[in-house]
Length: 232
Image (cartoon, rainbow, N blue to C red; front, top):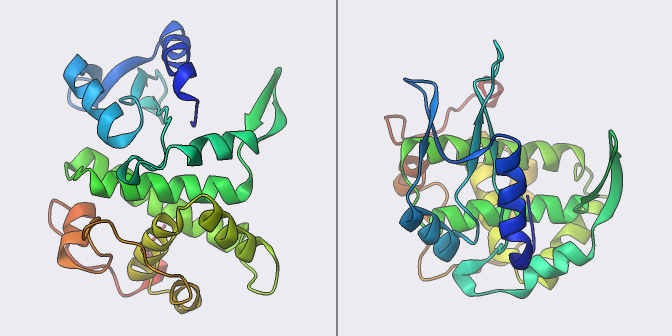
């Protein structure tokens, strides 16, 4: 969830009031392992978000729920205006009894891409967060194939223009390159080659490199599957 920096403390307290704890889920014991204050501070400084909050769920199909509050979408480049620009363009929808602000489709896509980019730049290479980042690449692909499927429509060009306006073209390109490498998708590859690259001091790992796959698959597999139908 994207929040303003001044609302971060209130968002965390609201999550805690309904049973969330700041920490990591311990698969072995089925509990939440708390994080230290130092870990939370480092998350805020280098990732632009609070450490994720976790809640144990008593459900046969779901062990835990996770909340991630971000207040800065591009801490790598000190692009402090991007998050505020996104939040100014929200629209409201009804979720049950609540009136909830939502990012636009373009900003939702860009926000996920930006999250992938800043995670890669923060060298988050442990297995837990690598799995989560792999899921985000899957989310990017699903958005591209649904909300932004047509090259003849306006949705994709508008998303590209919006990324440029937010100064986040580098994040969009990085995530798109990762999707192309993981799924070997030629249509998305044609979109990729039209985007200009903006890479910060050689980071994050170049999509397609050994370092990139080690980042996503730290326990073994270092190359993507050739048959894209094998991916969920």
